[in-house]
Image (cartoon, rainbow, N blue to C red; front, top):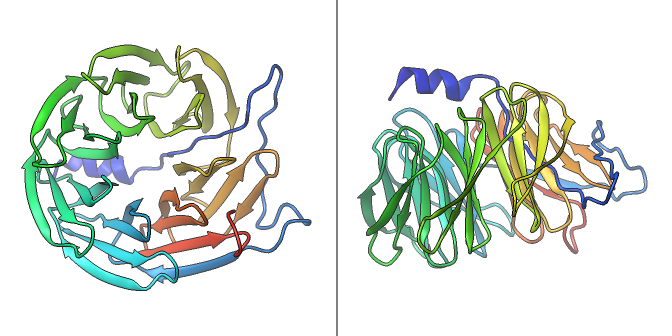
Length: 327
């Protein structure tokens, strides 16, 4: 494990984003406080054990999978989404820090091993381990192929799910860390370059490199709402919004301290904040929920609830605003 990498990963930094439908002169809002909207029903917040260092999350349609990050740690945990019951813990490579679901199987990025592991979603059986670039991190599935960001190589690798074959490795910016896709395009957040790379998923062709203006060269967090890309600018404590097609800078917004993970629920963007142990929801109806667990990082929406991986106490938190429906 690269000691500089450990120090960087454990430093104060964020991964955040925002979604507000932009009209001319639209204002971005964020509110502070556990229950900012007094007219909104009190949320149901439940926390469950998940193993050491809950880091990255994915959803398979019925279950939450958690990459349990930690130096030398090599497993993922499967929890039933309906009630948080642990269904199994399964061995992968060393220091898993990225995870995605391809519709059938789970893929995990093993940072220390420079590999990705494929496990069967139904029972956690090991199906294969495949070499990629150095320090693999963020992962995503474009509907056809799996992608992984190789943090140490300034590349991304495209993988065929059926057999783990590498279909291509493509240069991007420095220290690529987060990925998001709409199926046709892939956006890559380059932590040290202060840019977002846009690639065509069909052939990996570079469609553009979009600068994040006035960035501190320490970017974390990437989200997509169908029209816009949201980037977390760690050093400047802000959200930057880019046009997803052209990469044009559309504005920014100062936020709280140490946001890390971002997810979009179809209406709002949700952000984890490590320093406060809270989760913020951004949009026309704004709220902050917490505290959740200690050191919230990864976050996802399962179609009904928000799930948060709490790195420092090895738990996950489920937030449901309306138990009969979605947040």
